[in-house]
Amino acid sequence: MCKICQGKGKIKEIEGIYKICPKCNGNLFNDTILNLKFKNVTLKEVYNFNITEASEFFKNFKKIYYQIDLLNKMKLGELRLNFQTDNLTSNIINTINIFSNFNELQNSNLYIIKNAISFLSNSQKLRFIDILESSIENNTIILEAI
Image 1 (tube, rainbow, N blue to C red):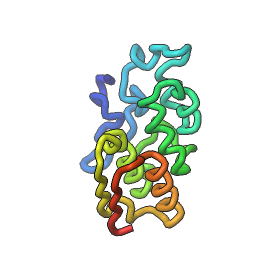
Image 2: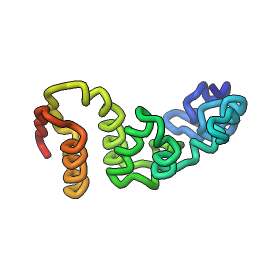
Image 3: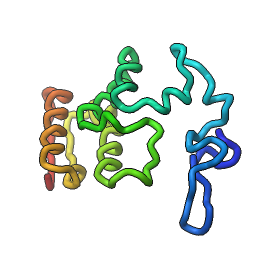
């Protein structure tokens, strides 16, 4: 990890105010790690992919692809993998949080999603429900406060 920001991507400038780490530019890792290549692409280049590009790049890696593709289906395709949460709306952050745990949800028979999507717009809620229905078969889903 970056020695300056300790892998956080940002450093405290003054109390309560942070700035992007000048050493790693918010990428969390040092140059040695960022320059490692996978499929002839460095980690630094992967970080600069948007969700749509990452979905294509990882299409043969089921666990990674699945979560990225869910974000793509929620119309977050232009969001970059190296996003700074300070620049995102709470709706987008909450959507990312929901889908970051989605793999664990698939192993259950009952899903209770309470107040988890109340922040979404109506069209996003419909997309979310479509994704649930297409991803989870023969199980019970309870959505509360949608």
